[in-house]
Amino acid sequence: MLATQRRDEIAARIQADGRVLVADIAHELGITAETVRRDLDALEQAGIARRVHGGAVAAGRSSLVETAVAERTDANAAGKRRIARLACERLLASGATSLLLDAGTTTAALAAELVATWPHTEGPRLVVATHSPAIAQQLAAHPSIEVHALGGRVRAVTGAAVGAQTVLAIDALRPDIVVLGANGLDGSGATTPDPDEAAVKQAIVASGRRVAVLADASKLGAASLCRFATLDQLDVLLTDAEPDGELAAALEAAGCEVLVA
Image (cartoon, rainbow, N blue to C red; front, side, top):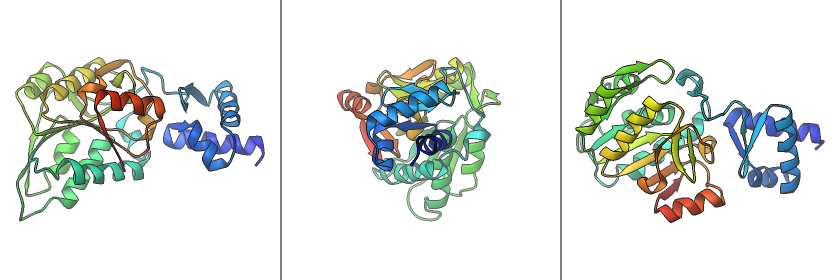
């Protein structure tokens, strides 16, 4: 494969998934890690990628960049569905019957999986609270899921309710499990670009008896402006790719379980 073809292939993967890892590309294309690094350097100079530890992310992914939820829905949809199925199998298998669900596209995939798989007539009732009007409407279609929609000012870019009213409503809850999305997850913790979103996520983390984060491969190793949780505040990470060595070591040191779909 010529260098230009190889770089086109790597660039296409970055645009599709948001992030690539040096080790993965080297293995899949049968080239050395040093060759991948040179290719990523070239893509960075071309304005296509931004180098991060272990690989590269799409050039537009700075700490303040927020993509509208409608634009993110189809990004790595298959990976998000796998994460959602794993979350249903592992998080609710312990008998949990109350859930606080964050806004986001991966958490929306979990909501869709719950509607498809939660028993209609048998089994325990499931109580779900969420500050996403879209997710609340999605879950309300299921007769055995009791939905509590948390109010507040709805941000157009994420479709999430935020603000003091939302934080107060969350503070009053103590669900069995809280499930959050994140824009980035690295050794410092889980992050999001917007301070109001971060405040809501911090309240969600504090309310949960067990705290789970759903993050596809594009979020691993990335960081946004506002940290809402350190790794030791997270009980479990559900993802669709093995974290790289540095992040894996940080998660293990923090006692955060990693489940890969």
